[in-house]
Image (tube, rainbow, N blue to C red):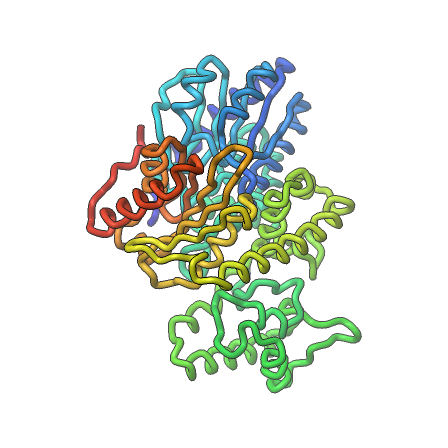
Length: 488
């Protein structure tokens, strides 16, 4: 996994090139039109770019979207900007950009697989894949935006924690004990050196800052603990039987409130419990790296990098990305208060959708090589990706990727979100290629990473698309390479 220093050096040199283009336009008071993706990583990237441009005193507008399409092209044309910046998407749409707006000056700060020709002199692209660096696990879209921002002005190092929140939102903590590596590790070091981040080892349950201990156990899905996950009373009994006090005065205690001795006691008891159930692998996953944002208030969702990422994701998915951007830029009052309400609604929606999928077998169908969730008109197309991520995590050792789709009636299209497992990747599955090739075969557009990808296809081509995707995955599982355009 260790990257060659020359690859990193080339990537950083290209970050300087992107920074030069941005700075020159800003200094000439040119108008900059910015677009970013709507997930946690995209909102984090948007926040970093907005902070960078604000510091440059630049004239700009930021829009957060689901993908690059004719609507974006029309907005670029109407704005007549001197520069377009795209973050967390763009690399998969080079042909469209070359066809529609080849004469616009464009900076693409992205980490997705590259498709199409990137030799247009008006386009400046910073993408890790060009340098043999894996964009699925070693740097996220907000990380790429961070390197460009840092090259514009070293003061932007204060955006490092936000870039890590984006990486955690994109689940790039794939390395030993859920650590971040590659270019992400450079960002971690920047944040630690600036006194903005503390990296600790702890139980990796979600909600360590905000959830009462017993509720944290009851809501955990990674690892899933039979008898405790989904069982609040049993979880409460488990903690009290260890002699760990649930309250500090009137306040319910979270994991971060426990002292070292209590933490060790809880960890040992959970390890023994999992071993008694024969779940040896889950024991290894109990302890991992935690990314603590030291300038944030304890017991808030912003203190823990993983919790922060869910908050950002909810603002983008629930059509309120401006709140997430405001938080990334430093608003801790109105925007944060409103975002916490949005997060609650988001969680309710996810639970509603998960319950709906489980209700009837035909809503999740198993084909020869893939599973398909038929979200159709029930699941919101902006939340379909989250639903597929959660469901695929319950298929841990499965070799079949999961495709989920929701209809976008206004555009006569279906939005597909594909997720797969590490086990499937080891067998040669690359969803970025599958989604791109299957959608192109049926008049749509698609692409992404090997482990997570998306596409948009015409409604009347949904079944044909599923059939093609199923066949393509089958071919990959047999060892066939479908030809990724990563290095064009």
